[in-house]
Every structure is written in C-alpha cells, then in structure tokens.
Length: 375
Image (cartoon, rainbow, N blue to C red; front, side, top):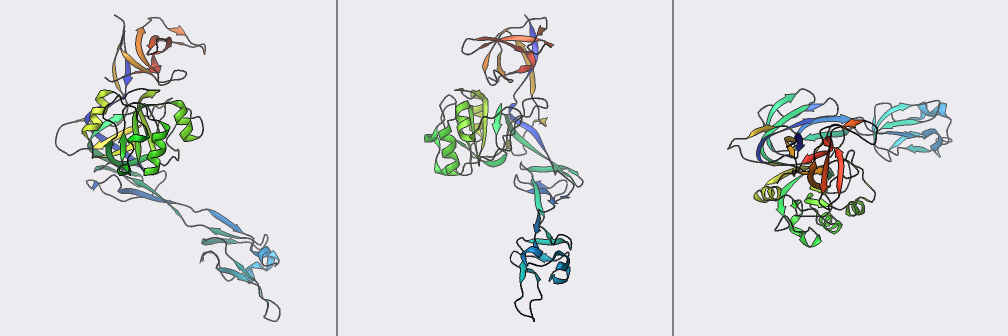
C-alpha cells in the first residue's frame, strides 16, 4: 500500500514549552535567569522615539521667521506641555504682546529662524514584551529578551485572528459537536478563554466582545461570519495584527466542523486554568500556527517542544485537512497516492494525492498542501 509522511497539528496534554520573547530593537531585560514569571510579567522593555510635532510659531504670532529665536521663552531641550507659552512678542511700548503656545507635549528639538517653526518631539513610546506564559526564565539574551520555559498542555489551531491574550479556560458547550452561538456566552466569561464545540457564529463573537471575553476557540467558522466580524475578506497570508478586541482560533477548518474530540477533552480537562493564546497565523512559507498554551505544575515528565508540527504516515483512508487555497480548511480522506509527479496549474511538477472531501468531491492537490487531522 502507498504511504507518505505529512505534518499534523500538535495537540498534547503535557510538553515542555519554550517561549522566546524578544524586543524589536535593543533595550533592557527586566528579569534574570532562574526567575519565576507570570504570563503578564514584563520581561524586557525598550523605548521608541516619540512623534514629531511641527508648530508654525512665527506665523502664530504674526512675526518674521528670523525674529523667532529672540522671542523664545523656551530653548532647545526644554520640556513643554500643551498650552504652555513658547514665545512672546515685544509688543508696542511693552503692551499688546502676543504669545505663541505649544500645541503638543514633549521636548523642543529645534527652533528655525528660516521657517519660523518649532519642532516638538513627543514623549518616548514604551515597548514592553511580556512573558506570555507562566514559567521559569531559562535563558537571558542580552539587550534583547529571554526564553521562558514551562510544562504545559499545548494545542495548535489551523487558523486564527488576533494577538496574544491570557485568561482562564471556560467551556461554553457540553459536547465537541455542539454549535457555538451567542446563547453560550455568559457575563461570567469576561476575561476568559472560551471554548465551544463546532462552528462559532458571528453572533457568538459579537456577544463575546460585549462581555469582554479574551478569546474564543471552536472547531470551525464560516467565511461569511468571519467577514461579518472583520468587515472585510481576510486572506490566509499572515494574521495576528487584527484589532478585534478578541482573539479567535479554529482548530479544524472553515465551515460547520466539530472540534476533534481529543482536543475538546484536553481543553475541558483544564477548565479554570490560565491559558495563553495567540491567534497569529501564517500558512505560506514559514508556517506559523495559532497556539493555546496552558501552563501546568512542575511535577511529571514531558517532551521538549518549541513550536512546529508533528509528522505522521499518510496512506489511503487517512483523514487530512487541506491547508492551501482553493480548498483551504476542507476536510476529507486520502483517496489515492499516485507515485509519479503531476504537472500543476503553474506548470511545475510535484507529488500529489487525491482527497475525497467530506461532501463527496474528489480533488487532486500537492502532498505539501495537506496535514494530518488528529482523532
């Protein structure tokens, strides 16, 4: 019988998870190796230069630009507040003086006698990196960040939107096959990572945002519901920067799909525990999956895991999920594994397989375009 190997999503009740937390540019690491941290601990911090605010000060006072330096009440390097006088005209016989006031808060960076403008640099912007998971700092990367390690239950989804959030797990449905709608969202779920069974509806998402839930997790979502929530069609290139006020993760695919029983049971077994969730997804080169990490206590043994997918045997009848357009998120079973490469629509050759979709349609796709579906 023909066989092949393909990756699948990682779902494990216990692993050693390492979170590599780095600043976008050099800064200060706030913790030391061996420190215990929570998911919300700031482990590294840096500051970006503030915004620039040009103020047409000479024009504001109806003065000539070359007069501005002699009229200034403030000098370069001084801190100013909104509405604070920056310059004042001499007036007539010491009367009828005109003041030019700052329209921004910050530090005076320059005073120009050619343009009559004052440049105010706004306050520096703090960029903080949090630990994401509760655990132990096992490595410090000087001026950049840290690696945090913890025993954890770990679940990868197939698709997500929204960034990093944390909250206790709350189960919304009683079964992994139960549809997930607004009736399942309760006020007590504020700040929680809420888990449903099958397809999450747009109504459930809107209601979850109203009560302030941190994240929603379900087996599937319909394209139309996602469009309704986002307000636009979302491609499958890179997600995670969406400003929804909530993070969404689907574990199986698009459509009315139940969450895998094993995944639902794993999440349910950790009800009430704090979960760290990241909806960022990248399907093309450099695959990145949405993640659910549930920190556990130190007791017990586990395998080390730092991200990625597991491999498994691909053969006739194996359940798979298609992870590229035009059938992204579709589920089915392997129907055939042709031995010879086939010519694709792009003109290139690749090893392919036939997938019998759950609706009965047979499609031929490159083997790299599928992954195993956990039972």
